[in-house]
Length: 252
Ligand code: IPE
Ligand code: IPE
Ligand code: MG
Image (tube, rainbow, N blue to C red; front, side, top):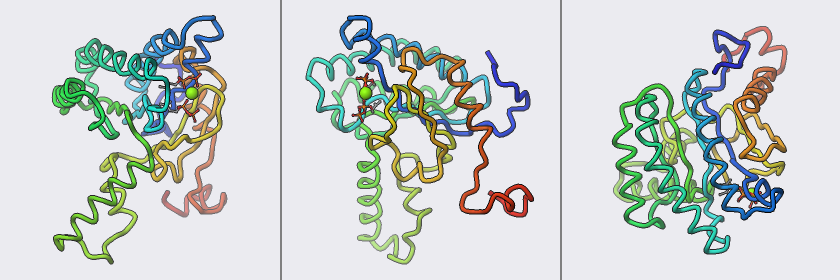
């Protein structure tokens, strides 16, 4: 399904990063346990992937579990882990058939061996797919990402592979978990909260932000298209003036 009027997909965001929020409230509004909302959210993931694959988006990152979500009740954390495992098992062949490359970012060491193994297998199975890169952020935190990048850089400095003067913004980007991928052009948060909640802190420096009160299980392709339309209507300036951008006297 292609809802955008822009038939050439000009100015499409290359990378969309989404905080999928509001599952719990979606269920509670229906007097159902929060788990029902998490299960209902899987459909929105499928819709999002389909929209992105059909509209020439190169990368979509979905925030599935934050480093802070361990603070939730054990039963909810366990439910989220088993939902993650079962969705992975169920969806991997479908994603592969759609030519989608799957990757995970976040600290995997906290997960069970079985889940870590499934994650590696899913990445290997889809590694040469080219239509869309789907990144699932699990046990991810923007601060964690900066810490692990710093540790890698310091390890290289310790063996003399990097000099202090070589620490540039590019070098740091190259050691983040998103190394080699374009930075998000469009950030979407569903569920009504207007905060970043420790998602991609470095990578969002110049991302266009879009907040909607739609709860994640209700977020369909039309809702995503609204967000993309909003993105397309904006002028990105990256520090330049509006006139410079209009005159095309600068390359963005
Ligand atoms: C987002 O929905 C899913 C995860 C954080 C795993 P929530 O579970 O945060 O839903 P609300 O915000 O309580 O409604
Ligand atoms: C952010 O949602 C994390 C994910 C969607 C995975 P939360 O619902 O955990 O965020 P806060 O705690 O309300 O900021
Ligand atoms: Mg929430």
